Image (cartoon, rainbow, N blue to C red; front, side, top):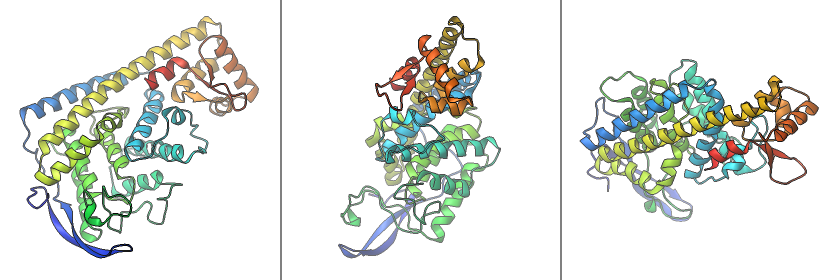
Length: 389
């Protein structure tokens, strides 16, 4: 499958399996990425052009927002839920939308999904501070991702020092794996550093979108960590587009599209390693980014429209207090919440927070979410409908 690959080489590996005993096999080591554009078809260049146009439209929508960071939160939570589902950790989107960033979720799956939100926020702040992508940043992102999970070991936050395999069920032989990334060691660590250098060095020869697609392939193929590679790799797509200036606000949610096409997503990545099919991968990647950008732009526009409508309802109800409109903004950033959440984020007393929630329910801005009497939660139903559709 890989013997004639133009994008990498096979190297021997071996070890001892507790069940099967000593084994020997080969691993795939990708070549360093080229500094010019791979050979792409007209159809693929057209797909890239469509994706760039969709990204420009998304960026134009984000620039019109009075507070872009406010609407970053709900889209980021959607991305967290979907990118984690791709890796086998599923939590209902409603549960993720209801997490307060100042609290620790009780459910293990929700907690793991929300680790992605913290990792992404850390990465976005890193880029906005003007700092370049580094191996250290990747390591810190992985440490945040696995915090409090079974992967939170002494290896967390470090490039892996053990061999990993992909696509093998528990108890199977190494030879049953679908793909085996490079073995750990000095050469492996050098290739990860070379990858970072390639991503961060200016390159006028390759379109930024094509670069993001190439970088995603390389990162997933190197598989730098014991866990979290898929989530970090998809986060890097947004980080690269943000850092290159293609996106001024990192609101793009790419994972739902890839999640819906999971099998083809993995097949396209594998085909680059097997046959050097950059054309098929980049076209698939560009189609995904174009669709994701269009969907995100529509969602942002709808959320902004609802925000304006809800604030008009607040004014029509005669609620002049600034905290009433601030509560509308909070309901966009965290679509499902408690009175305690409002107390904390608006920095008002519990009595005032409870009164504000009651007033916005009377104004038909908010309503109770669910029917539990204890630990009542609330939502702006128009906001939630947009996020869950």
